[in-house]
Length: 71
Image 1: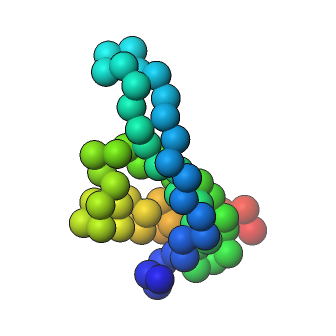
Image 2 (image 1 turned 90 degrees about the horizontal axis):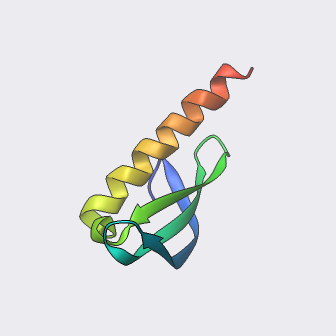
C-alpha cells in the first residue's frame, strides 16, 4: 500500500475503440489517505508497476485536494 492510496479492487474490462478495435483496460478502485473512494481507468499499455503507481498516486492526491474544497 502506498501512503497516498490503498487498492481495493481491480477489474479487467474490454471496450470498443474507434481506431484500434477491441482494447483492454483496467478499472482500479482505490481509497485515498483522506478516505475518498474512486475508480481509475488505466489502459492496458500503462498497467505496470512503473506506470500505474504514479497514475494512481496523482489521482489520489487530486481527489483529496478536491475533497478539501468542500469543507
